[in-house]
Length: 254
Ligand code: 6PG
Image (cartoon, rainbow, N blue to C red; front, side, top):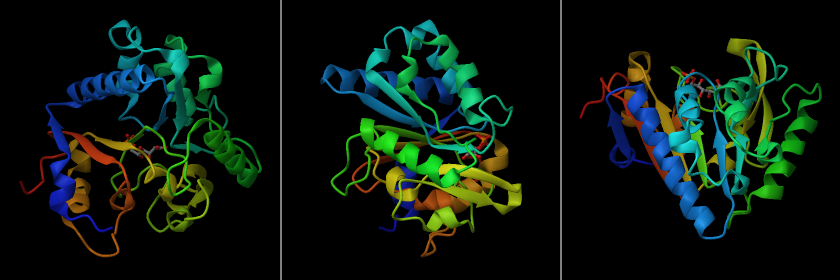
């Protein structure tokens, strides 16, 4: 379903800076998790890596945000991972662990680490898809329907590990797959479009002036088919929100 730039724009919140953006994201996590758990459910979320969400994860680990969360009823997944050891400086898991997991009472089995260091990346992807399906209920279309997915956006318009021109962009039958990223000379494992678009709510977090040009293109370049991976994320029966700071929004036309 093509989204006009106006539709995409309506779900945009512009914050003064990354700190304010991160606090708003942490507050929303609290509210959505509390609502789902109060209704007797398990709250499931997928987390991205990179640098933007780090402060959000750190805030979630502070008493202000961590104490109200009923962590035993929360399950956290990864949106993508670099194919490196979990203690590598490049590991998204390492960043999430140091920023948050080491400081919250989330049961270890409730963080579902993407085993991207395994030599057999196809097997690792299948294992992770099975793990996802074991915990996350399916959407009507038969994909695991996460309650919440946090995504970032690269300056090239990539999101998760769905990079422009890479094979994973075309993946429509698997929930998780390996992806060779030529520009980085690196293998990744990533959730695929069908899973991301099955989520109940997707929040893009975009910060910094260096993203302003791409954010404008993602919002205002409405070619069919879409040119950038971030434009492909449009939850079928869910919500899409953009949390951006003023610097990233500085080149939007309105
Ligand atoms: C990763 C992330 C990736 C990230 C973007 C933005 O593995 O790197 O999952 O998709 O969200 O690259 O990264 P920054 O937040 O560092 O700009």
